[in-house]
Image 1: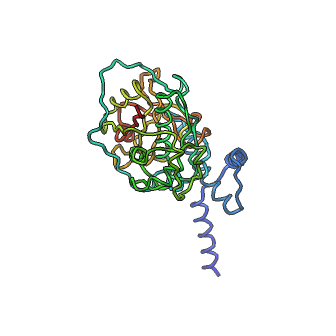
Image 2: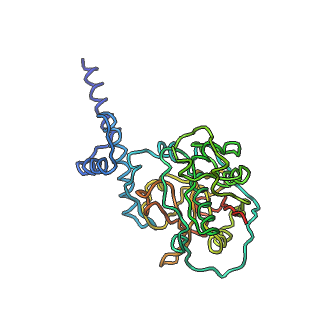
Image 3: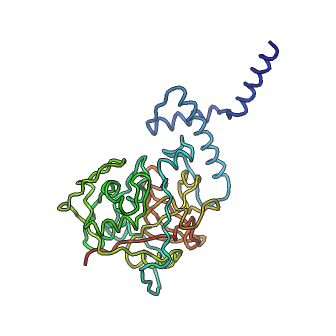
Length: 331
């Protein structure tokens, strides 16, 4: 009997120490968050997600209490561990995007101190949402091609990510498991066109290819890769020509990004570690002189600063200069 009592006390003690105590305020905020994001759980899942949410909120609060160049905030991912987040929203297939020597020809400046293609005209489509599919590479690709085409023709057309998911696999892309914008652009070049979002709508899962050549809306004459780690060449391209696709290494802190200039000491900065692709639509500098890129993400407008983020420029932050590219439109 004594042994049974001892086992029971030890089990309770172990459970208490393994399961962090949740405050009334944390549970109240969790219920608010559930309502805001239309989340519904059964009893067991509720307790599990509450624990994760509380842990994420503590990480966010601790970060925001410190002296950092960016702030964190609750968002649609706040009930997920980073392992879950990485599985659903980042590139799960290893990507090595290195381009030792690119084809972009850099001219000498001077360049404007601030560039934002969103304010230059109707050149950037609204922020999209990739959902639970590691298809960021397709959104980075379409975002760049949409802008390049709009700058060349004056017509901003939303293009199909789903066609790239379904059809670009022979170019070392893996649908919802990942891919690279440069390889997607090569597919569009040799495939002779990309359909519109309207004609080939997004589903967010791998399907069979049903590209219709007669419905191709936009074409690629050639793919321009910027020399690996040449961030000045990225500035040249964005300042003079158009937005540019780039990839980088996302770590757990980026999942909670809210606003400010993102920096990290935890991420890797080499071409073989990139796991997310986005679009540089401009650049600038903070009042304290910190230079940044303005980047368009594909996690919807509820994440970050209306779906955008700033990331430190000039230091190859998280490998962002390892592999950047853009397409050339038909002459």
